[in-house]
Image 1 (cartoon, rainbow, N blue to C red):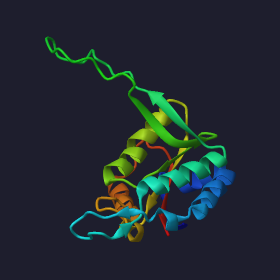
Image 2 (cartoon, rainbow, N blue to C red):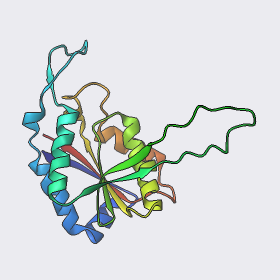
Image 3 (cartoon, rainbow, N blue to C red):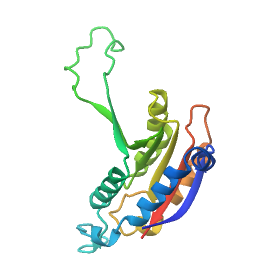
Image 4 (spheres, one colour):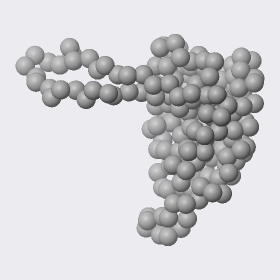
Length: 189
């Protein structure tokens, strides 16, 4: 695969280049090492493209996970203990699900990386919420979000979001004082 686009959210590119140049080279190498050709395994059942062979997000994610692990990156998981004291008086809840968690795909030396081939809401959640949470918990101080560009998303199931849409939305949203610096990388085959 290759990097087709870069967007610096809240000074993300500058922060990664200054503080994590070796890890940025790791990430670039990992992206180049992903063999997307073996991930075109999903047979479409959609009306607009019945039977067409598409890139499988699961297969792409497996390759990223293997390649990041080989370079010493690890996922970080935080258990969630949901508060119950905010229920209104008289409300009886079923017992809350135990074992809930939040997870960051890859972390090394306080640089967090998320690889996202899902819906738009997950991309926004990663950058605008999850990275802030993981910063507040002391796991990261800077992030990288890896997403497909439109050309790649068009070769995946409908509903997969893409770099161009994500960047437009982040630019219109603006930056908040709690936002983490994030380098967003748009990738293609």
